[in-house]
Amino acid sequence: MKTSTKVIIAVLFCYFVAWLDRMAISMALPYIGKEFNLSATALGGILSAFFIGYAGCQIPGGWLADKFGARRVITSALAVWSLFTAFTGMVSNITQMLIVRFVFGAGEGVFPGPVWKIVGSWFSKKDRGTANSCVLTSTTLGPAITPLLVAPLIAAYGWRAVFYILGALGIVCVYISWRYIVDKPEEYPGISAEEVRLIKEQRAADEAAAAGMEQSIAPKASFWELIQEPRIWVMFFGVFFLTVPIWGYMTWLPTYLVKVRGLTLAKMSIAASIPFFVATVGMLLSGWMSDKFFRGRRRYLVIAAELVGAFCLYLFYTTPSVEYATLYQSLAAGFLFMALGSIWALPVIYLPENLMGSGSGFVNTGGQLGGLVAPFALGLVIDWTGGNYDAAFKLLAFSCLISSAIIFLGIREKKNPAGPLPAAQATGR
Image (cartoon, rainbow, N blue to C red; front, top):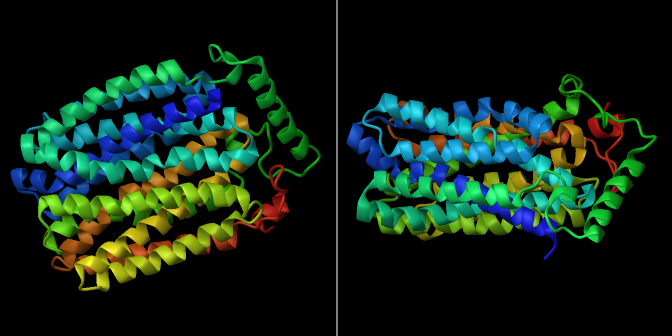
């Protein structure tokens, strides 16, 4: 097995546990609400508390990775969020819950930037879309497996025990990250000289392909120069409006299935799990299709997936049939996560390696602001409309349309598989 494959598997496993930790709260939400007698708005606030910490630490996490190395930041983040995952099971009131979920979010918030830096260090531009989609399968496998894992634990031991178990699993990740995730290929213990040589040759080919081109994101740009580039803001807001439906869907789906569709805990766990297995397929296809068929025109894959996903969301909340609802919610998840994998191929390809951590952290801040807004906004809409979940899902579908319009208008590509795009072609100027 190639060393780069081992690194990606280690990153994927740690990211997967991160998603188990953050998705478990959605499964526990009905029981937390009952125990503390909370409204839908208050429950949305608990979900959003995570994103306040998470979004606020995206750029600092990337900056720390650029300055001190991704490995140290990843391992430290794992230790913090695992501790506060366990603390979630110890809270005795809503105030404590909000504080714990905020710090938990901050711990996970410094994690993504270093991950994209690892991808940038170990893979050439032509393979980053595929490597990126492999890492991002954690965003679908986590939600897929969480209901199957967490529902039986809640039924047997109560919701608090779930967070103790997940906190212990996080400690395993601390060891894995320090053992298998290394900042630079040449620093990995036991890596062959041949593999190091191939990776360096791929880096040199990337630099040669970019040489002499008018760069909109220059290889040695500072962070402040980076955020003056229009394309980075296009990616920021494109990701923001895409993650509103994704996070709104993920966080409220279990509660919707119980309260609106009338499913039992056991049936809900299955119904909430199926869409994310489909989403895993969509995520894997997104990276492969982006690198294989859409190099130089990746925005079209993003737009098509978002539009189909929005239509499936509409079919999901309008059908009276539970069986068809399961079908449509699965298709919606598949296409929304295909769009997510496709849209994230943009920053990992266009950002220079020295700013891969802070730049991707900046883009991901937009995504996590979407995650912050979505749960709370949906809770407000549900309360304002007297429990009308259909109105909430309309909001999610509309957000997909906004994101696709931003990408369509803001990204102008010219087929150029070897390297970054010229400024005028990439931004439409």
